[in-house]
Length: 105
Image (tube, rainbow, N blue to C red; front, side, top):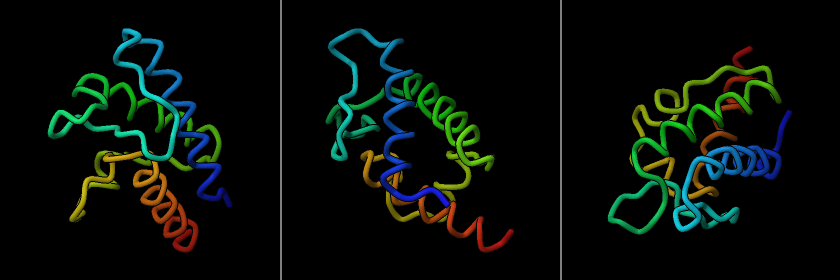
């Protein structure tokens, strides 16, 4: 089973892919505190960047874990918080999802 730190590395790989599409001033840093969504204009990705990021991350997760998930559906349904707020928040939510998926398989 993949652990939280390995999930963060997968998120960083997806960030690398998305950063190739962004101008230098909009590129994301690879830290746990990096803001992913641009709510309240605090930085992060615009809507197109978020779509590209989600697609890249879903692909990376599928390659590494053989689990297909739809991040927009699986992580946002019934969530009280934004799972895409930061890298750390996203890693926590993916980790919980993968643990639940493993127990149900």
